[in-house]
Length: 141
Image 1 (tube, one colour):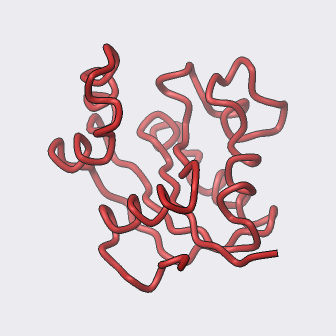
Image 2 (tube, rainbow, N blue to C red; image 1 turned 90 degrees about the vertical axis):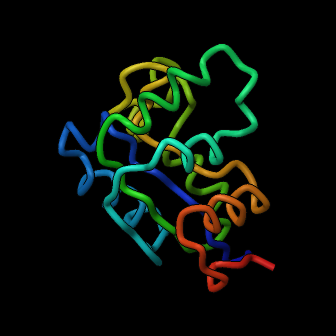
Image 3 (cartoon, helix red, strand yellow; image 1 turned 45 degrees about the vertical axis):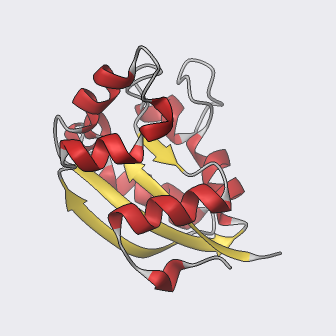
């Protein structure tokens, strides 16, 4: 088993629901440790950089608008197979299809406002951590 660091965002809708503590507890109870965390608002340009792979998709503008609409919690999560573990804890992208007890099933509103983001690979985690934390200490290589 490999110790990895992944990236996670608690999105504006979950922050608005006062679910920060509950979501962090879910990560911690499932073997992930918070290596870094900050409560902030994402600037539009940084958000567009973060979601650049979706730029040509019809939902891009709505996604950027939502993600910049309120405070978010940015986290570096560390643990064994952190990328995979985080994705299991989050649940399916669509909260209606997410397994009971997962973050998205409990706190997501719909596919676009699904409470949390988590890196889908180690490469994505490194890119995303650099965007928001600008730290080399989280490198998985």
